Image 1 (tube, one colour):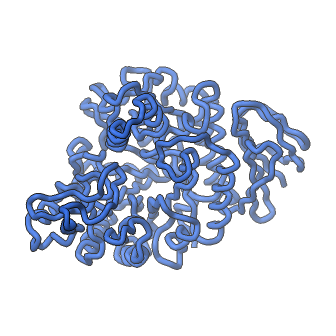
Image 2 (cartoon, rainbow, N blue to C red; image 1 turned 60 degrees about the horizontal axis):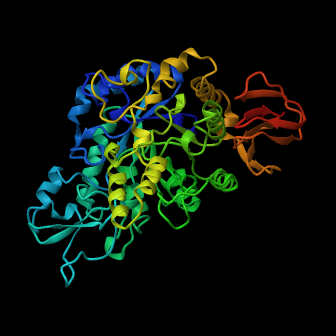
Image 3 (spheres, one colour; image 1 turned 90 degrees about the vertical axis):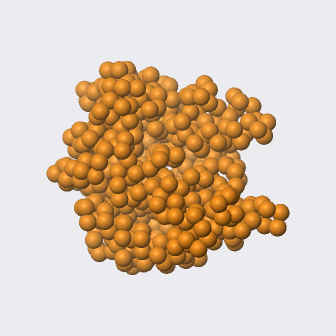
Length: 540
């Protein structure tokens, strides 16, 4: 059975940075509603909405204090209902961000849990006695630096937080926790949402005392229970964020007969520019052969079992043109190449806000300009360990999460049309050259390449269902592959570098489907490829 999300394209909105409607410098739900016509013009099928729930905002909304209320800065539940309804009018579904590995320490459950060891909510979280020396029970580390255990004076025990100390981990071994989560999910399903993106869902089966965090032994039992208690049989889209997934693990999540999720986000490709066995801040150049190998593995191994997600960017990753494209000399060309390369693959593509107009990273010169808690913690940690300040900032400018979170660039007016007030995070000063107004007025802009790629997926079953085969190329920096379905054959050719090269076209092209160097004609034989050139042919 096919589902709507298999030929859909999803657009991620980071609400804080998308559009401010009331001049407080913070994006909000009414701002998103005001831009739905723009998203309808782009052609997307769903919005993945980063968290808008009530939150003290220690980790930009991923620390939730009330799952059934809206953050004051973003608006009201009435605004949320209006967004869902206005999306439906435009055939745009709203995918909620489900953050259930942890809550905020200001959630009513945790406020109760920390009061005493015999509180009814104590077992909603993970607690442990100090060891014999009074230290944490083990050396489990937080993703945001330091120990994953925080001491609570009130009861003399430690609680677990795999992220910020203001994000205590829920205890999924407690059946009451699980059913409270399912009740909350059904609250949102009843409102008419299109599904859930599930934040770090691979951590909910953790066994912290055995130092198992991802892919714990009961993870899939929990997901099957969740499926049957909530979204099962409702044709909703569910995507799990799974940093540790392999293709074999991804099949467990996304094989339809297993009754778990629609698909997962896997991040193997996104780690290719970091040094092996180091963390994301330790940089190395991207190897195109390695990228080809990873994409091919995921395309072929999930081809008939499970389903792929396709993405370059999100709120946690730097802007792809600055990262693996060329944001100096070939911003538009490399942006189009990256779009064509990704969107012609099999799976559900995700576009992160601003990606469709070619937004780029905004380098900072001082830690005072940084908002992201992960970057700030890493900076202080590495400074204390003797790293040079310049080297730390270089890592933050390359990989820091603020790069993706600078406000959306709408037009030429002050603050890029994002707000009439003072923006919560600096606007990239290049908005005079890169903005939506400019993109819509230029028929050759990156926006229209994305619009056409979305239309191609909607109109051509080969893009949705076709088999993927990598093509061997003489130049290792040329990434080429076939898509084939029912006797139809498309060839995708991309030059992943800032210099010219060639590609041997062994079959006569029947037509050119899409290209990023306009009015160029092609025939069988040696193709001369321009820097970052991308072209898709129909072969037969």
